Length: 326
Image (cartoon, rainbow, N blue to C red; front, top):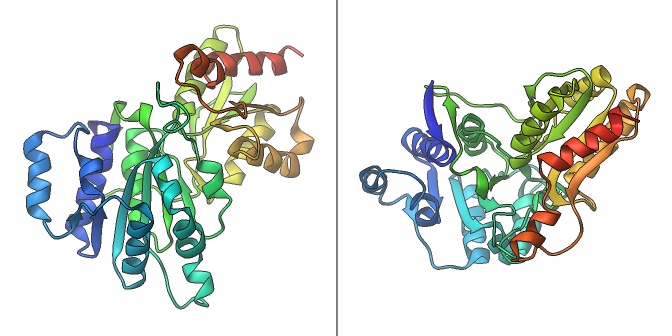
């Protein structure tokens, strides 16, 4: 095990992939590598080692997405970094109409093994333009895999799996997780898609949380434990594919469910997980399912207004108490 920050874990995964697969190429390398916690000499060493595979193209998200998709169809494994998630909106036609549909619309003759990475989430002062949590939109596009890592170990293991996947994969990193540190296994390890993690075991309520909200759910669980409520925290890690079995098994054990996601509550990841449990484990529920998500309003630049709509540990605690004290 090694202690790493979230960003260094991702960069190590990318460096490992570059060294072990000559078909891996990075598009948008500078915005991914610079000012991310690497020592200057280590960053320089990467540029020197792969001068032809670390690419900084002109800023045109649509063109870059088409470039990466075409390269993937030709046998490469591109890693495309958009920077802030809202920049990827400039490439939505390419992502949704081209990238996601390559395999199906070629009758299974072609693959598009590329990774689309973006930094997202309510980050503090990002306002409406740079506070996007777009995971539900990507989950709703058939043909894309969707990864939401919540720890340095998952960031490294899941990113390696994304690059090795033969399907187009969207990896969304919450900006507030970048400085997070944690133990990361040594060696060439990957984390399979569709395999949730039980971040904390409990018996009274299941909290299913994604990305940064896993950290908030764990804080809430610690606070609830002081009142005698033992919450089980489940981190799906990937939304497409989704580990429905682990989620439903947890709900069958606890009888209660709170879902936590930073996206808009309407048509959200929280909504999908809630519907899934209602369909598959309704008989196990002792109380209604509750969602903790942001309301359907633009994110304000104002810190108090931003905090008012952001899901956090206190809001999770309140939701759990509403279920357990009813």
